[in-house]
Amino acid sequence: MAKYSGEGGGAGDASLDDVFHALSDPTRRRVVELLGRGPATTSDLARPFEMALPSFTQHLSVLERSGLVTSEKRGRVRTYRLAPRSLELADSWLAAQRALWTRRLDQLDSLLNDLKEQQT
Image (cartoon, rainbow, N blue to C red; front, top):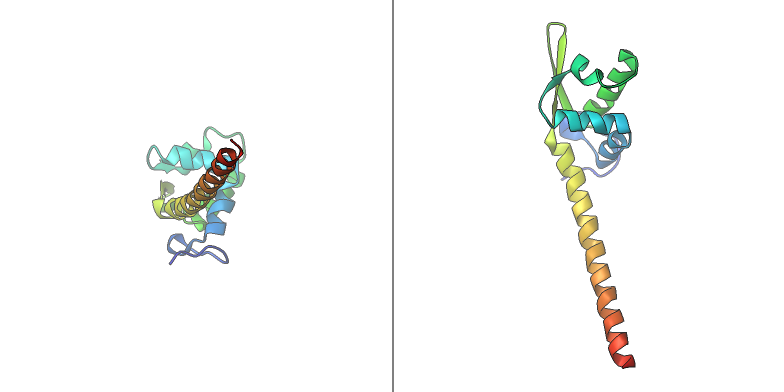
């Protein structure tokens, strides 16, 4: 069962809180978008951003701790890949919220239509 809050660890132990925290930053969301095109090295990912490499690697660390990305180091090169399982966790939560609000709005619509019919 998915963890919705609390401490998250690696890719297999990410919590929903960790995922949303990681996605709360525009730099990290952009990195996720870039990795959607395929694996990339740290330097390839850092290139479009105007920040020092140590600051950028902190963003990558947050993404990795949240389980959104994984990395592999070969020699001096670290390559990152998306780990869709954590995105699926967020998507499932959002889908449940969407279904809840759709049902509530449908009920409200039905109630308003009934009231309108009673007035005519």
